[in-house]
Image 1 (cartoon, helix red, strand yellow):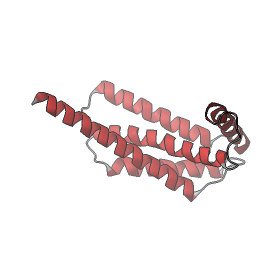
Image 2 (cartoon, helix red, strand yellow):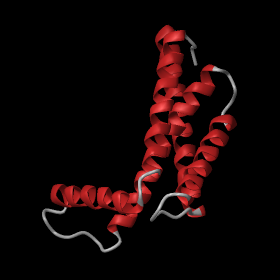
Image 3 (cartoon, one colour):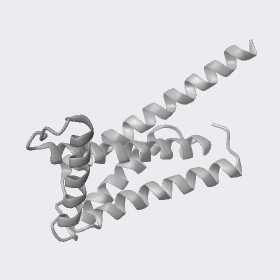
Length: 150
């Protein structure tokens, strides 16, 4: 990946925003986090279920999907950063998994929250998907550019 000062600044800014969002949500007490999840669930039910109530475990699934999605974004940022630094594909995954461990460690100390190995696994899978998506997207862009040049 081509490294410029502007791209590095943008990438680091996005990376910091992802981490602030992830860890900021982990610092929220359980009742606030639950209220946010319930609010989002109700909005999604209104938009997609045509007013019918969702499944009983819908809030749980929504939270796990949110974990996966936010760590997919983190994985993409890490892959972009380490790609510009020419550090390979294992480093972004390892840093993303470490961020997932920090995330769950934060939750140990927050009232109404629990730490879960399952969440670390979900988060790490999200990071892996982000690395794969960005790697594949970069490969497609390079291939397209190569085809245009020939």
